[in-house]
Length: 175
Length: 108
Image (cartoon, rainbow over all chains, first blue to last red):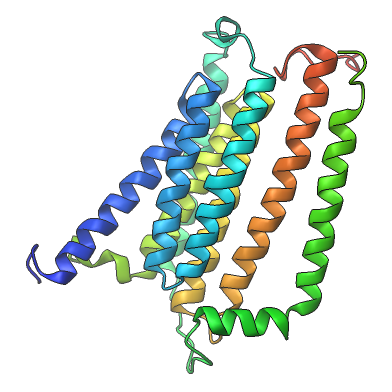
């Protein structure tokens, strides 16, 4: 039992704040009526997830999470909302109450089942650990063991960029 | 278990990942706009990423594998978001709406 004001206690407090950030962000992202608020909730949730990655000993992935998700994906979704914002009065109260309850129960059942599974499984740690998982080791195996996948991912991203341009340009004269 | 020591425990991260997955699934079913569904799908993907990172930290014999897999999930999610948003823009141009109830041209 450590005290609240030791180094471990402060770390625990920061971790609780991280969990709260993630949970509140996810709730805002799924429940707010206006879509632009949902995007802000998504960004808050991703900031919490990046802090979780930092707690999991990988500052590199935490940095990438901030850069890609908060910096790129959320901003792209915000631009799409500005281009295609639905009428706010149209979506208020139109949702079927039964559908809301049903989807909430489906989500709650998934959460409950996964939680029970995680708590009741006897997880076995690895006998020996090959390296320390630092950024240097990640870079090494990204360019040796996983170099093929790395190249394939870059091809996928290139095709996605071209496909997005083609899809968004089509029918532009009509508008 | 002390509440301040939960950051060093595998189950904490698995439960957070399960929460994000459940919230994402709830949002995917409950949202009635295409962009709202895309936001919920991003939540599902980040729940999966948290699970990968937690197993990578606590159980994996080689602690770079989970990090690299998470980076690949991020790349796939970025590609998915860009394609899905351009489809949303194209749908909005044709229907003047991103409501899933309005896109019913093929309905019999």
